[in-house]
Structures are given as structure tokens and as C-alpha cells.
Amino acid sequence: MRVQGGAASVAACVLIGGAAGCAGVQSALDPGGDEAATVARLFWTMTAGALVIWAGVVALGWYYGRPHEEAPSPRRDRWLILGSGVVFPVTVLTALLAYGLWMLPPLVSRAPEGSLTVEVVGEQWWWRVRYLDATGAPLVELANEIRLPVGEPVQFRLSSDNVIHSFWIPSLGGKMDMIPGRTTYLTLHPTRVGTFAGACAEYCGTAHGYMRFMVDVMDPAAFDGWLAGQRQVAVEPQTPETQRGRDVLRRAGCGACHTVRGTSADGLIGPDLTHVGSRMSLGAAGLSTDAATLERWVSAPERLKPGVHMPAFQMMGSDDIRALAAYLERLE
Ligand SMILES: [Cu+2]
Image 1: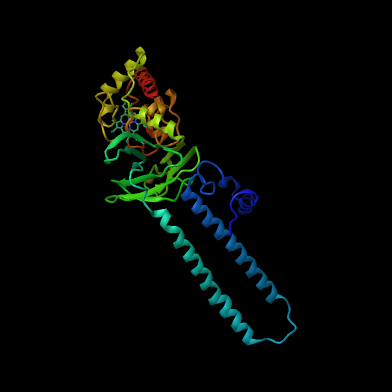
Image 2: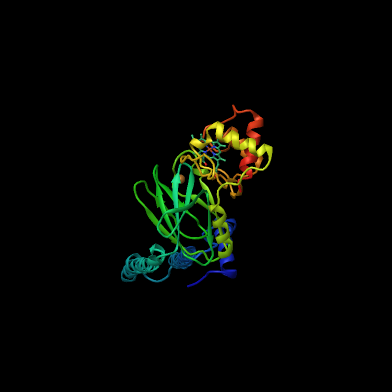
């Protein structure tokens, strides 16, 4: 039975009382990819089945609960108990198991050889994202943001070197754990251009709730343009203020943890900042990347994201921080 789409699904959303949860950038019931559509179909099928069974149980209860004239019949009662207590659940659960197993293979299969491969590493508490070339070598590294060409399969390679995280883009597909010491794989087929939100779905410490990311599914030509842009080294600062910002970054030792490609900063602990100004959000926490937020981030990141593994730099003068923020904002 298909209750997907149109009035039926709207009615079901309202019925379940989760109208707000049925649409939007982070909803498994508003699919933007093949895998999410499969999951949504399973959900609606099970919901419809549950409603039918519930109605049947209520009807039976009502029928046997009303006052009876006829004499009790132990034989009929035995058949009722055997039928609805054994035969019915065994049949329904077997059918559901078969349906679920039949659905599974496409959800766990690998993308064809030569597909776009994106490595995502779960950090505490942000996402290291690397686009890999055909040999598996990284082309570019960025953080907390994934862009994908619409209509093409993408192979995710997932790992972690700290605790278990779980990579989940509800609008595009199911979740997959990132387990220290293991590499797990997830294949997605985005079918709709749009911006979606992802989150960590496995409690991983203090800032777990801030461990979010954005996914932009784009036209393939726009995607190629974006990837080419990401491969460029950082832009040279053009104004006295941004030049000062670059010098502050060098002096303050940000390069011990951060890389800005094209400069001497080549740290590997924190996110690559080469194009941080063009990011859709800052700190995996849905913050904007404007200069004012960058200023607040650098002076006291802990205030914006409790538990963050970046030291505060408020001891730098406010002029230095402002120049630094202006420089970072222009790293597009
Ligand atoms: Cu996590």
C-alpha cells in the first residue's frame, strides 16, 4: 500500500500530530534522495498497517465487550485466542520481516566504481570533510559542509579516531555509525536540488547537540565550479585590515591547529580554514560566518559552543581580533 505524497500524507502528518516534523530541511518524511524515500515508504507502510490492526483490535474488543445473550462457547474462544494470539502476529511479523529484508540490499550496497567519494571523519564535535580523487587521495578538505551533485550516487567513507559518532542526513537517507578503528560506508542518491541539514545521531560528549552540518545538493555544473573553487589556495588579503588579520593569524599560532592553504598555517587539529568565509555555518553549530560572529568565536568560542576544543583568544587586543575576523570572513 502506498500512502506517500499528496493529501494522504498530509492527513497522516496532521493525524500523527507532527505536522512540523514532516517537512523541512531535516525530515526523513520529506525525502530528497532514493534512500530516504525507501525509509519513508517503510514508515508509511508500517503506519498504515498499524492503523488497520489497531482498528481491528478495537472492533473485536467492542464486539466481545457488549452484553451477550447467547451461551458461552469455549471452542470459539479457543479459535479466537489461537487466531489472534498466534497465527495473526506470526503472519504479520513474517511479512514485515520479509518486506524489510527485501528493502535492505539497495540501502547497504556500494556506489559504482568511479563515483564521487567523500570521506567524513567524526571529530569532537565537528565534521572533517574530504573530497577524494579516483586514487583515494584527498582533493580538498573542509568542515561541516557537504555539497553534492544532484542525480549522481555518492560514496561516503566514514571514520572516527575518538568516540562513536553517527552520520545522519535524514532527508537523504538512513544513519551510519562512525566507529574508531573501523571504516564504514554509506551510499546516497540525492534526487532533489536543495539545502538539507545533518546531525550526529549518537551521543558523543559535551557538544554533541552542536554537532551539525549542512548539505547542499546542487546542479552538477554548479558543483564542479564549487569544487574547483575549493581547490584554490586562500585569497591574498587586499586591504590593510585584512593584511593585519593574516599577520595576527600567523603570530597568534592559529597555524598550530588550522591549515590555511597557501600560507604557512598547516595545522591538522582543527578545521581547514582556507575557505571558511564561504561556509554555510560556523563551528558545526549553525552560527553564521559574518565578521561579528567570527570575532566572538575567536575571542571566546566556549561561549558559543560549550565544550569546544579551541582555546579562547580574548587576551589579543580587540583591534587584532577585529582584523582577524575581517580576514577570515574574506577567505571565501
Ligand atoms: Cu558526534
